Amino acid sequence: MKVLAIEASGASVSVALVGTSGVLAMISRADRHGHAAWITDMVDNLMRQTETSFDAITHIAAGVGPGSFTGIRVGLAAAQGYGIALDKPVLGLSSLAALGWSMLASMDDHNGQVLALINTRRGNIFGQCFDHEKAISDVIDLDVGGLAASMATYHQETPFTGLYIKGYYADAMATNLTQAALPIMASDDGDVDASMIGNMAFSRLAAGMTVADYPPTPRYHSAPLLGAAKKDR
Image (cartoon, rainbow, N blue to C red):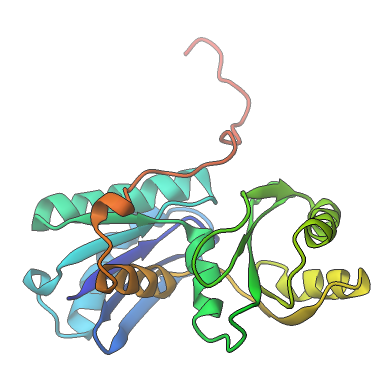
């Protein structure tokens, strides 16, 4: 099994190839805009770098957000395009889930939880909590102060032995929540990338999940941020 993964919902665009031995390679660009212009060249470079033929790909996986409205659409469109061209199944994975799972996979504390954070790029933060098996909270869309207050309330209602924080503003959020007396175990700033999407897709497929369990459906969670409407159009 080889999974071609695409992630464009965040501040960068990345592509990765994941196989039995893990991530074979990943290529990323940090451009905030113009992701659609780079993806196909990046995939071509990825295949050359790993000396892999397109025929060897068994699945395509893409991040479905939440995140950038345009980025989500670009990533899914590219994944669907490769799926049609190669006649391969396409999976859609939550970018927050992939981000959280990337930390869960290395945690020794199976009673701990992960708070995954993604920048909405409009002043707020998307957050969601996960344990080792599933999402255990809805997606939160709040500013930093509101998210910290929400987590403090959440801890009162559903106590946890330790919280690991992964993603955008993770270190600052850890400091904030430590001051609120929450049991913070560790934090790691960073953004979701295609290696996380690919690793999660590979593990789910290896565990017997199917494409039907992960449909390539976008998760926006908020309306697109549009400029002023153009007149006479």
